Image 1 (cartoon, rainbow, N blue to C red):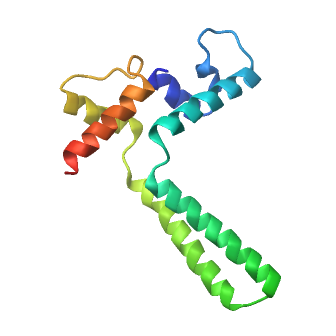
Image 2: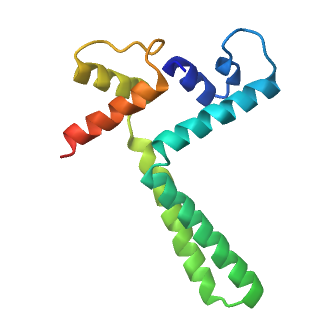
Image 3: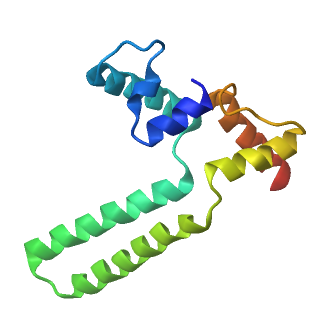
Length: 136
């Protein structure tokens, strides 16, 4: 899939999963699900997102425990987890945009990367190579 289409799908325009212009919203959703499953199988879920989801799970468990036991001490734990979740949600706001990242990768490669011709797999492979070369 071209990276341009990937970005459009992330904006909710799933018709960009179509290979031709014919299709339905149901087929678009099925295609997007398959494409995203392939992405997750190949590249996985990043650590930050896994940490965020774990905090959400921990909070839900504490809330259930509080409902079952009425132990008010659990409210402190819940508040601490909520604060951590808010912190994790705000962490990503300082990250660069996809367009800015594409510019960085273009400079890294030494030529302009065309969003309509680079595939999603090539893009994420390039990000991984860039990270390895710049983080040690």
